[in-house]
Amino acid sequence: MACNNAFPIHRASRNSTSHRSVPWWSADLTILRKRTNALHRLYQRKRNNDELREKITSWKEYCDMSTATNPWGAIYKIDAGKRNTITHITSLHKPDGTLTADTKETLNLTLETFAPRDNIGDDNEYY
Image (cartoon, rainbow, N blue to C red; front, top):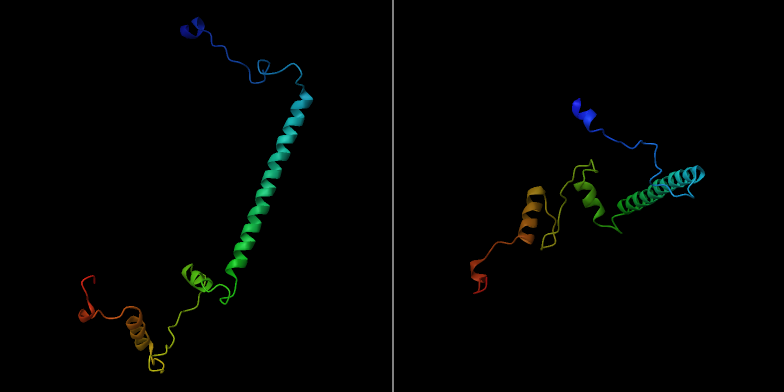
């Protein structure tokens, strides 16, 4: 308490802006500035919402393209979990022209085609 009396603290009041004001500034200018800032913020929010809405619409159109124009669309939808259908592996054409009979035969053909067995006799000095 003695400290507070010995060293008074001077605080500027919140309403006192005389040290920052210029002689030509008026209360009308303050009101106009506040109104301008409010309208500017409103414009910024509206503009951003319109841009966001356009981006979302464009993205939805892209995602809804048919598989003929966008072959990856179905894959992305399956990966994102947006398709509730169960994916079935269908029959494939074998090299002799016949179709695979069941899922196991289809998977074996797929493995042989895309991951053939390694033949040691085909190796050379680089492989």
